[in-house]
Length: 296
Image (cartoon, rainbow, N blue to C red; front, side, top):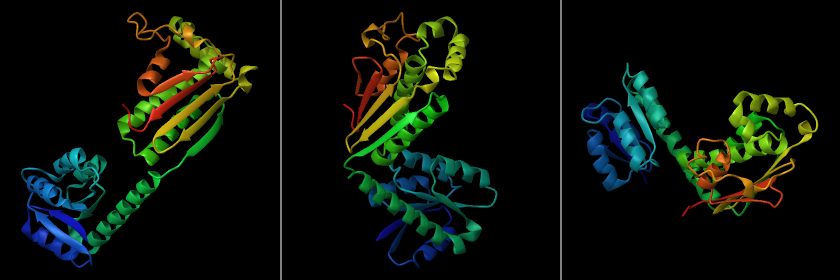
């Protein structure tokens, strides 16, 4: 049985919505007269989906969505909007609502909209269940020295983690930052052999030299090799460049107050802050970053 919560301060509109929804077999409808009452009903009844008016006294539909994002983000919300509320409806959709139905079109659109949102929710849950049973996923890439490609690589890995691990936005961005730093180090300092000292002395000269070397031998032929091994519990990223390598022990301590504002070792500091383990090979041209699904 699917439980639908209808929230509206208008008894006429609640009755109309209830009547339409109850025509669908297997749907149970409960009610709340405003946003505050809805929060109490949600605690007691755990509805599968919420259909709410946008403009209500006390707590608007937009405020209800904001509250639900903190405590019941898994419950989809469908808005019922009156004429003239289009801008607020757009804001609500951007804030997390799943869909909306103009009140003037409830009779023709409400049931179908709720049905489609429920189907999408069910598919998403099944996909999450499937991803939680993953054994191992591996990916291998060979990239040219192109910043746009490296940023696309980072975004791809963030998407993979969101898909397989349901990693939240903050953790995805932190992981993405660590990967970007590793990828950029592989390109600028590894393949193109442009030093951090130059960046500190002359920011523009650093990037000008990098661009010059990107198009000249021997640097133009060097590649960045990226491997991902992902399980249900751990992600391992291996990033190797074709450069000469370096001795990681020679990196200045980036946590030293004197070095915090300098480019030396900044990327390594971010990698170590956002990953569980960061290890270089003996020649310094390959870094392995490990991230556990549940961090200590």
